Image (cartoon, rainbow, N blue to C red; front, side, top):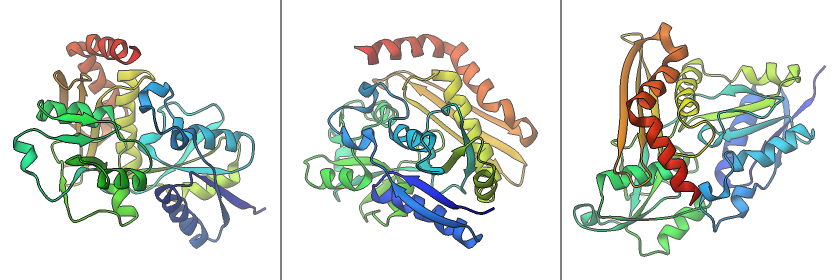
Length: 307
């Protein structure tokens, strides 16, 4: 039996790029596919900060519903947008090989503001907290919308710069000349990775998509997302995590961090473990942070965001 695999995606340029990438890979393996674009609430409501909308997974929800209703067979997501707990009946079918994990600052050709005062834009609590931690005198303004919208808002604003994931801009050739790598900023868990989800009971599709899985990326993103899940239990918080495989030593190098919303408090952890210990690395790292003042900090963050 063969069927056409219907690929659900958001209709932004980046989301469509991701869907077409998966489509090409499946077509190369001999499968028939079609792309179905769906608008998400996260793309429609642009005037509220994400955490105020109170939904983890606002970008993935619409596609989840389309899958459960049988309108599409798989959905392609930026993995960092996907809640750590998938809806019942939906499973992780493949994680594609990871791209650039870095955050970058897109600026307007003048970086003098880094030594004085300035205004940068981001819609991410994680980026905001890390920016304030390093540049406490700066102003950080909210910036929402897909990559293209955010680039346009930056161009039309009087801000000094805005923070983006390098991977998103590289994928659709939007990375400008005026940028700097923020290698001091710990990325979002699973940043730079693409996730394909399918229905748990759809063996044909799961089998097809599993051939696109990159095991190294799967392990590293699993560790980062386990760290996130253990720390926050479903609410939004300024959390960064990066796991990297060191081929020479056969180890996983892990960095995890939790910030207060204002960036003043920072609890971090760095670990290097043998590859055989990857399964519990994210969990144990998060536990250490929780025992080291993180539990109190998470309570504070939840209270701050409820206001």
